[in-house]
Image: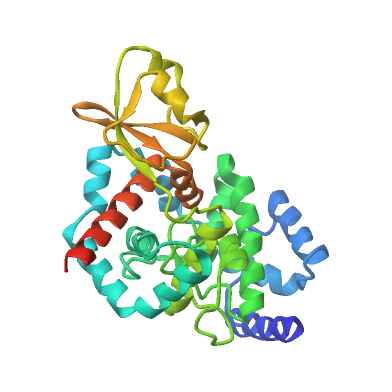
Length: 330
């Protein structure tokens, strides 16, 4: 099957580049040459075909601007209002209703709740309406070779993208995505597409752009593989007292503290849980009225594998709660 995929990929490359005016500026660069050698020597790409693909790539300066001004730099009150809208909740309920069987199947197979899966897809693309306007090839080459502080990461993703296109037998110029090169309704980076995508629809290859069953199963698998614990809490609003909580590091990438240690430093969840995990972290969010605090549990940090921003993880959780409550009361 891989050999057939390589043949199809080669034919597509030949057809798409036959009339393209070559621009050798990018492929002549030393760092690009190093990348090409890896793709040729390690992953067995044909040099002429790979050169033709990279000559198709176009530098997009607006992508650099977007990387330096992400939504996550907005204050919490502004950020949450962008995503916690009636439109998104209603669209989520409709998506849940239309895909109930696939969501139940995913929940049973991967032990990830439907409301979390639906919330992720809603925050990422409003259920497929906003999948991105950049060619993934352009986004990844721009960030791999014109954005030094994240070059290593995006060079890896460019490699994974070219491998994905070869495996799926499609042109590297075909896929559209975000300014960061994320793809489809769940906005998977190419590495996640290759390693976590699941074919629930059984159509031969995973389709995260159009096939909701594949989207649902892939998001569920991603969360499962990153350690989601079913029926465990995600986060609670908190009150801080005294000065000892200043000893804590806020917005860490992991649940670094014992729950008892948080209590001892003056951090108190606003409500009591009988099943709170032993480990937790403290989230601090900026608002015009001061700081807002949340106790975050391991499931919260599973969400941050999808996007490292604590604002992102919290808005996914809050949307999931809104969806669950609305559905329960319907």
